[in-house]
Length: 161
Image 1 (tube, rainbow, N blue to C red):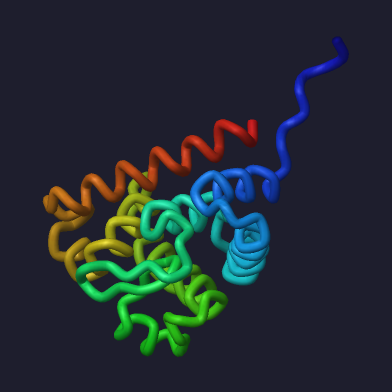
Image 2 (cartoon, one colour):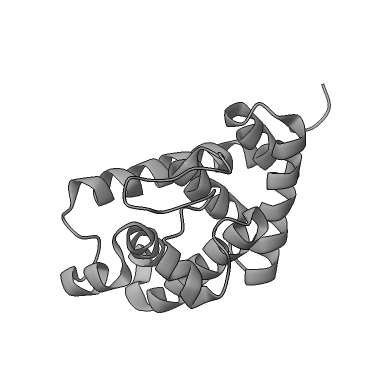
């Protein structure tokens, strides 16, 4: 019984989470690689990207919301256009969603301990709503969304340590 248990690697944790929702091993591996690529490129925690994507689409490539958001990261067509990606292209959707999340993290960086919470709330409700309310808006859907992303993130982190 040697030393402490070795922590799982990031790839395995993300892959296991993706594959638990998306039963296709090849798609799960591709999605995992895209998450790790995008999170590294934009400097966003890969577990945060994974938690947002899990909450948004359950890792389903062709997801479409009643509001018209599309793809794995559920980009609204106007947001995708502003970022310069095709929301129907899976890699464009993931890189665009991660870039958007990076922008929101930068926007709310001055919010202290609530910076990530505010960025996640803005991913759901829009930056204007978070700015108007000085934090997570009092929308039931947004508050539930933030809790779900937080729970997903904490579940991923628990496997890392």
